[in-house]
Amino acid sequence: MPCLKRDDGVRLYYEVAGSGAAAPLLLTHGFGGSSRMWEGNVAAFAADRRVITWDLRGHGRSDSPEDQARYTGEASVADMAALLDETGSQRAVLAGLSLGGYLSLRFYLAHPDRVAALILCDTGPGYRKDQAREEWNARALAQADRIDRGGMAALGDDGWQHASAAGVARAARGILTQHDGTVIDSLTAIAVPALVVVGSLDTPFLGAASYMAAKIPGAKQVIIEDAGHIANVDAPASFNAAVSGFLAAL
Image (cartoon, rainbow, N blue to C red; front, side, top):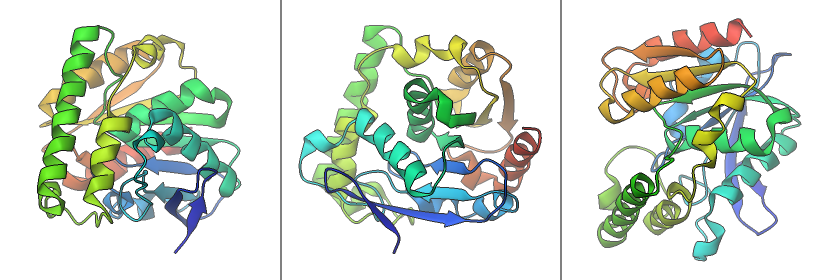
């Protein structure tokens, strides 16, 4: 089982598929998911490039440390950089769904020279107003409490195969929560090609997707019909076609 051991001792599960000279593709899953959510997509993208999938801290087959302080957005961005280093990828296309998309935007802020393009799926750029951010954080903390009370049953039978429900709850408290408006304020400064993908049924994120597509210079937007919040799983053929077309044009 391929694992990357981080400086703080946390082991991250990851896989690499495909080969080729095109910029590698780093796929980052959403909160409560795992790298398994990309199983219907990897083959479509791996014909001419390496595709890297991984499990966030507390998710899937990665470690779930008991120390809440090890779950932060900063740690997740550093994990992404370490994965690129581990796989010999100086520069990559970053694609992320939901929380994974938000982390991809954070990664661009920290390491713009390492990002060849962005693919933002069923996600948003965070909040500029404190009240809206506090409401988001309250929902994230309530979700963490629900997972703590219900354990694996609270996560549902989604096939993501988490090693620890407690780890997912800690990730909700430390990675899913947001602390400022830095990401949303940075959209107009993004200087790489960007694709914004959203499911037509993903009502909570339709507005955020349109906002990002309007603010990121030159961004393209694709709406996946009859897909919800996990568009790549709900409509894999349409999702793969949209992303493959974007990658081919880079």
